[in-house]
Image (cartoon, rainbow, N blue to C red; front, top):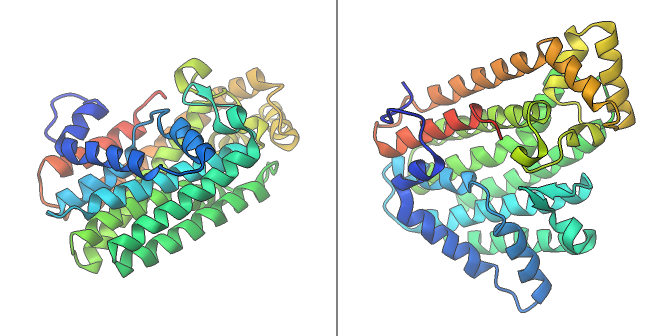
Length: 330
């Protein structure tokens, strides 16, 4: 059972459980983007105003509320998480030479690479300024470790780009570090602010980590099922970046010799020239179904981690976020 909803809810319905706090997070984000350097504000607003689900800060709010937190520090911490996420997007798009995100030009395409990197640095440091204000050593320590892990994940992904012999375990290691660890930090931070014991904090961290892994697996398989207009990014981006994502890794494991050859060439050459053939190979050998099954398995593990959380609207909303993250088309 996923929760009290009778049908699959929208993100807006899920946010209703913490609607007031969610609005306050958005207000704080805008406030903290202020800088007397115009370019910082311009680029910061450009990427923050692009929209997105605000999924990670929402996880902070819901995790804290589900565990009985009644203070205001989760507003600040949610903004911290969003700033760190936004900084990673700015840096990612420069590294990946991406030109489209959320249906419009990336910040680097609009303003240039150097400004995007430097404003990403501003957002990272602003996040830590906000964190210091929380006066919570446990959160500060964990977030220092988290940002370090994210950086390691970025480097690992760069190192493994163009390598068709990347193992599934290596792929999972990269997405755990690069993506899932921030989901985990958001949920653990909510539990920490609620004053819960280490075991509860660990369970919430596990929920976030498993959710984040499932989310990224689905994100990667959508590169071979969606179209650019629906997804808001260029179909085949992973190919041009030489990323050995799970659908490609699975095709290299079980595909025919011809299917394996076309995928191997695409990864090694970091090219989407044979995109149609790659998509056909991935679809024909069952790699997408396999990837979805793996995402579903992590989704179930995420739900299991919530077993110790008291029933209520916020716990239901966390479960629904997990469901939506795995069952989506963009």
